[in-house]
Amino acid sequence: MNAVQIPDLTGRTAVITGANSGIGLPTAQALGRAGAHVVLAVRDLRKGEQAAATIPGSNEVRRLDLADLASVRRFAASWEGDLDLLINNAGVMNMPEGRTKDGFETHFGSNHLGHFALTNLLLPYVTDRVVTVSAAAHRWVKGINFDNLNLTGSYSPSRAYGQSKLANLLFTLELQRRLTEAGSPVRSLAAHPGLAMSNLGPRTGLGARIRPVLFKLVAQTTEAGARPTLLVATQDLPGGSYAGPDGISGMRGEPTLAGRTTAASDPAAARRLWALSADLTGTDFPGGELGERHRPTQ
Image (cartoon, rainbow, N blue to C red):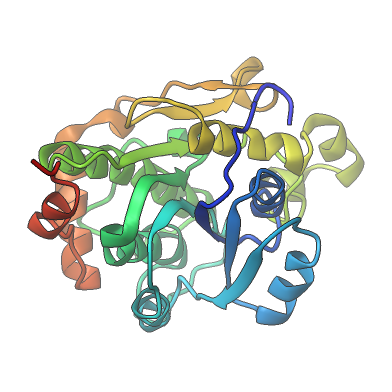
């Protein structure tokens, strides 16, 4: 994996949402090669098993539908033991207007709220870090539409996707603030893949508007798109770090620390989004329980 020297991960466990395709699969493969036990959290168990067969070392497949909070709760309730690394990778992009099972706009509900709930429910088990995959598309919007999260009456797929990716970065920011306040060593980090040949790309958004051959010339491979995630997942970086490709416009290149918009760095918006998300999902930061778990022994 160019520019990312992954350490030995033997004895460590990683959960990766959407690990059966896109950049999730090479992420899982790289962690598996490094010795980690990889848990593929996927909607389709058959596709998950097919993907697991390509991942070296120890792994397992568990069902998780981020568009259904009941599924998120079942996944978290079944968890036992330490979880070293949670990678919130799964996502949908440029979908027609629709709702999740719980009535949320598809992008916001799946990309943000599902991962928000999953993280809070699993956080008492997490020992190292939470990585959330955002996108350069967070730049497409100026802020979260708090008065109309479903974008009713003003819906566009790109605006909905951009809002969900902005939410991912605000979530990362506020999660790190809360972890620091709780005295936890767990870190919250984020990454974006640039323009990668994932299952999201060629059929939606930019890939749907230009010829597939041209897309292939512009986009980088899924393996390259996974490198920013692997960078923040395995290297010693401070909490709150955000990585992406180092090329022009951040669309391709080697992984490096990336910049974000002012809207994605707004602590007040991050706190407001957290409070709203907690209310919508019925989940919240574990607080004192987390602080007690990570309190140094005397």
